Image (cartoon, rainbow, N blue to C red; front, side):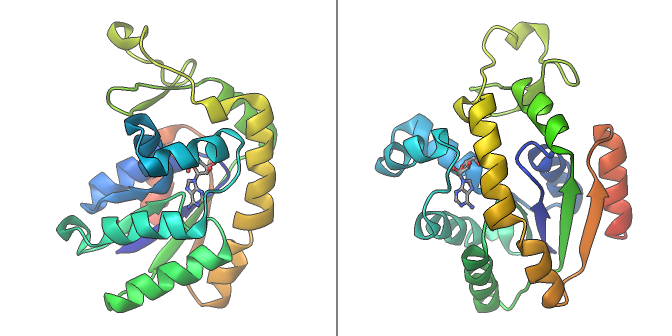
Length: 210
Ligand code: AMP
């Protein structure tokens, strides 16, 4: 099954995507994670992407398409994938359609996780990542275990001004994808993301008939 998770930054796509990927037995393809990894490793791509990411803007469509193409070619993704943070605009959605078509596949469903803007800003300011494992925590809702509390860090793009810019970019470029997929006849499941992680996950699985 090929599934797209849509939702504003901080809506919970990463957390829900990881749980879903585990349940469905398919990899999660998260372009943001791949880009952060490239930044951490200091690759030429990472060096180029860092300033764009820190400003809350979108990295070029060509760059992310290359990352997704590579991830999709892995044998682990032969049975489908959970896409988190990709596509981010209509051009990327068309490119993804093309990639999947080459594989004889198509997007089976879209899950749109909705959370109000004020809740998003609150969530993101409390978000922390473990640089060693990439696992994401929240200082209030999902605190990191004591033994790693000293090493968790805040993503540079989770600062309030950048979050607001990312929300603006989301509304302008990414939100139109809901209509794009509806017009194509792809089922779009609207899920209220302003609830406990387990509730949201149960809702998503129910909508997908799992
Ligand atoms: P995310 O972790 O998905 O919120 O992504 C963090 C940042 O990585 C975004 O704000 C963008 O700068 C960049 N990024 C991630 N995915 C994409 C994408 N599909 N297209 C363009 N830029 C992306």
